[in-house]
Image (cartoon, rainbow, N blue to C red; front, side, top):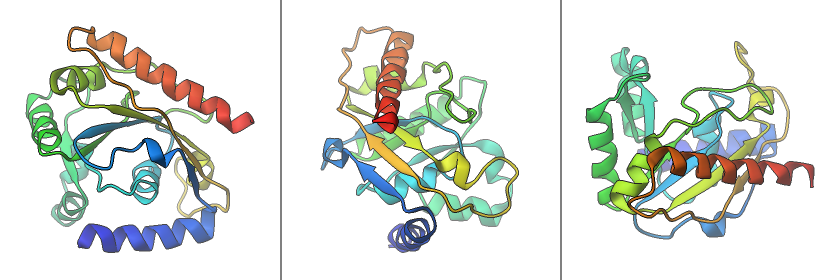
Length: 198
């Protein structure tokens, strides 16, 4: 209930200030576990995905966001759990696996950290590891415009359009190398980015 209430107010905020739109939502599974793999340019990206995806989402969030107890409680209620970046965080992967096995969703930013406007970075292999281990579909997503609405170091939202493009589900064979899967996912996100110029 708390998630849905927050999602509703975020939808109103982003719809009025950013004219947010989404295409390709038919590719999102109606039930069962799946991974949502998105590019990452802004702190707004998790909120944008929560608003445009009709399924409740879970997020891997960097561990230092959980230092403040009140903020940690808030983001946990919204589906986030901590992950230590630049390390192999087995506890975070176990939590991700638990949620996917329960038929829930998981948002992953394959690049690992925010990139500059118009830039797609190299992927980390985590998305490939989870997909291969659990045999769940991956839905690639490209977010355009979030970095203009909330640039780095900005204190308020700018009036600019955000467009979200969901792509066709990707199914991975168990023996596919993790890095190869990650590269495949980034290539799908890159192809979705071409929709911006059409």
